[in-house]
Image (cartoon, rainbow, N blue to C red; front, top):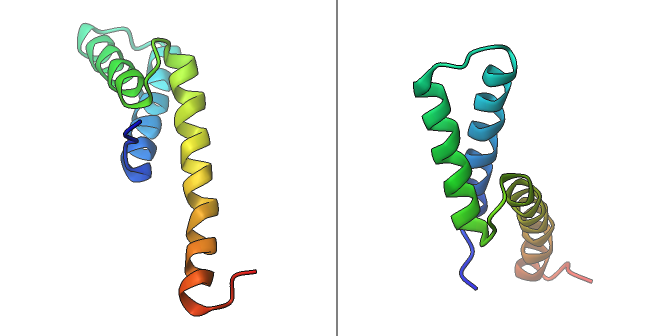
Length: 82
């Protein structure tokens, strides 16, 4: 499976959370709703899911995995990996 870059996933997660907070704060205008739907859809497509909640979980997991991989790869390059 092709994965979205972790930075892209992080941007989508942050955008979704920001829009969701605005919605929960009572902003329900059509433009906000459209942005929220579009962001949820993009998260689903980039994570291979069909549910925004699951897409968020998958994206967060992939972001965490990428952060764990970076130190390991850095150690391999410097010869300090165990």
